[in-house]
Length: 351
Image (cartoon, rainbow, N blue to C red; front, side, top):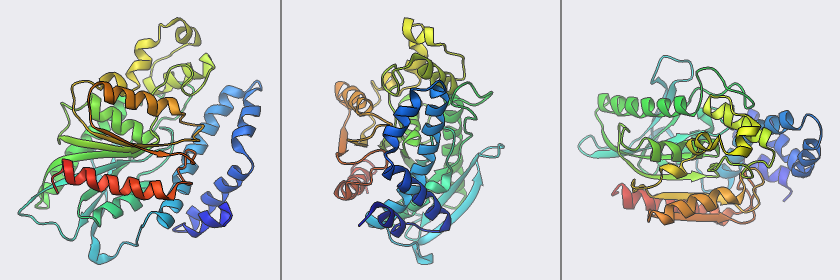
């Protein structure tokens, strides 16, 4: 089956059809080689960051279609439970979450929640990108939620008032509101798992290890896919200027190419990664990365796994050897990842 037909068969609606068709065409035109040619031009820095954003956005749409088709997803029925849309956790426009309550919930028992954080290079994406996976695990009996958060406006310079710290603050506020909202509904939620895809996976890991002590709910484990881990020279790009621009956008402070090369930006670069915070917090991690991912390169998962193993933190890595950032070419691995999530939940949630 050709890639376009395969992706179209897995889509859930007209808007997804457009996105999937577009990303399929880009994929067939060898986008990777095209980008590399463009990057040799004078406008390479801007083009790289634009493509990084667009690729991440289209990844969300394309990935939904692939997973719906080939990962055992079944349609949500009214008998499966209740979905509560657009619950505010703050006063800003983006500070909303959707809550998925299984029909099997018992008010006499305590429950866990899985919070999913969408990807999109920290600059695009929406919480509904994770709707399908929230439904999937709600059908397994777990309370699930997907959140929106205030996004960057630029990937080449700081966005006033928005950076990784503000995003972590919003995750914390969302968790607090989930705890409050479920309690008002008569359910006692006393534990949490965080998940995300791409930039969302990065945020899930960063929050878990950086904000472990202040989290309104104890974090039992993290399961993430293709989350960026490292922001040093060579991890994304070999050009100090491009690295400095991304670091400036994520940190909210100006970083120069000179600071990247002379080491003065080391503290800032380390603060963007979950790795320096992986030490005493025993938070098990399930992760998956694509063996042919040119966007989030193998160095990311290697540094994550090395840090987890060094600190003797339980970790399971599922290697999508044949896949790029979309993780679309290893159907057996998709199923293995799903089963691993359920095993983690049973082990660390206790049910």
